[in-house]
Length: 306
Image (cartoon, rainbow, N blue to C red; front, side, top):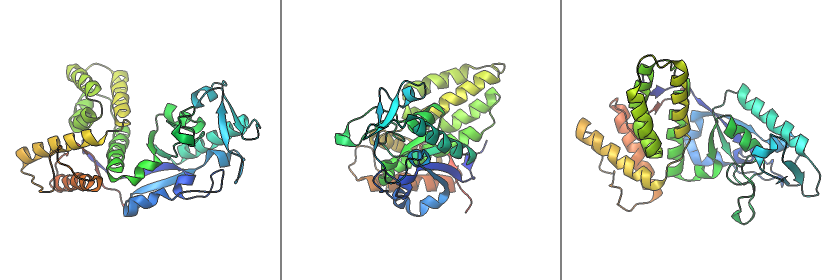
């Protein structure tokens, strides 16, 4: 089982974050500029649930009334605009239209605008950094469908984007693997275990013990359930402290066992800025992949066709 993924990863994105001026106040932000040339490594599908609802641009801002986006889909929450007009039905149709677009495009991930009552996942208001009633209507739909969700603001941070990008690559690679037997799980876990341990050490170690105890006749259903558990771990973000600790741990392993040596890589306690940390991680990625090795912090080699 090769730890290489060559198809261009398809990503959906809130249109206002893609640069389209579709927010309620006719504004938008071109967030992909922070990725520079790397943006060409992906195929993009921008959508806006509020525009697809028919509310237009500019429009009166909307809010959730009576619950959150999860409640919306079971009929317990309404959506109203500033003037008090009920736009619940319109919002539902707009969200479903965007979801159907992402499905046709075979998208695996979505970059969302946090703070939006439609696309937000952990906040649905921008006022005074209050949480509002998360998740939003469209955010809830994507959460429940198992999409890999990335907050748009994290594209501005080299370390945060590196964290999302390496996990996204592993997530899509794993989704595409045909996993029917225990031996498939063994191979997958050999490749992904260190990344999973960084993200959720307790769950990953328990999962590793379970995989090690499996016999050949556990059945395809159990195999599929374990695959889904790994995918769920990969959706969880890391943090700078853990990134530095596991970068050093995996680098030292490569240095001792494979002879890789990179002067720029610092121990976790060393002070340096975010850009330097990102450069360290990328250097180890490149060096290990040039030598055909697996770098535990970023185990899947993404080589999209140009």
